[in-house]
Image 1 (cartoon, rainbow, N blue to C red):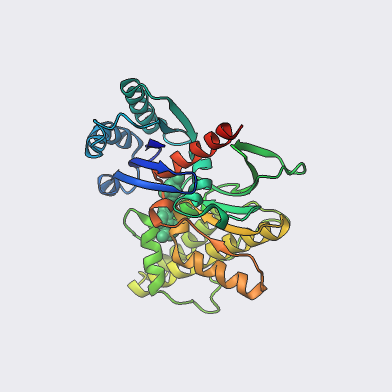
Image 2 (tube, rainbow, N blue to C red):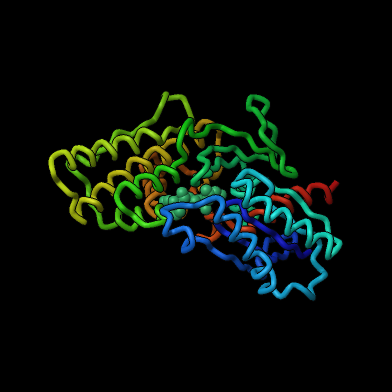
Length: 344
Ligand code: KG4
Ligand code: ZN
């Protein structure tokens, strides 16, 4: 089975051709136009510019796929929500037109559910032991989910993807963790894309004092919700204090602040993921979404699991491109639904 997947929810125009073989999801061709350079001068994603660029680039990207003679695709899947409305509409329109042209069905996909199932890409199904607890950490959303084939009557079911049940366990009550990375990076004078910049600075940084410069915000002990808006205020207050003392942070001090900020975020993410895993009897723990590309987050989770002597492996998507927004995950979400239909 061969399919074309389209993702245009934010600042990547991403098209993938993927083969599904009943044992694995193999990516045949991937092409994406990243708008990073276009948004950089404005210090962030400009929604109007994003939608115009999607409109300009999507056909060029499609032509590069050399798909014109490949009428043998079985269907087209496309992100329909959530995301920037003006950007989503370009992907949906392109999918609709291509569907007409090739006479293929067009399948709508939820972006967040697609992040959850990004863990399936280029991985053996047996490695995804259920129940699994999954942290989706991105620029827009920061949630914890339980993925299982068995029903959990004590939990509120958010969605069904084929035989998989998706239960939401917690989410950020304000900013997403990726958003905190972005905002703090801007405060420190970092360029777009901010998340990777902060982690690069943090790698050169060291603890300030006891290494707890910024307070960890854990909310209620029992809660699996998050809050990341306070950390941004703490960094802002710290920088304002420096400014009031006529002190401009040196390059090393910027790295140290980035280090302290990153530690405070990854500590909470790791602890809540593990707490959720223990509470819901997870056999595997997962991180996905843009923030899962952060090396320190992955290290921290491994360290915490080791310290607690837990027999639960923690994993992430097989490639960094599958952590950030991509069309391959959009396709997986659909095929998982389809597999269940075909089996019945
Ligand atoms: O999943 P994604 O590509 O798009 C959304 O659905 O939001 O995630 C983008 C987010 C941004 O906030 C970006 O700063 C963050 O992921 N990010 C990172 C890293 N790479 C991307 N945050 C921390 N460390 C990174 N290495
Ligand atoms: Zn995303």
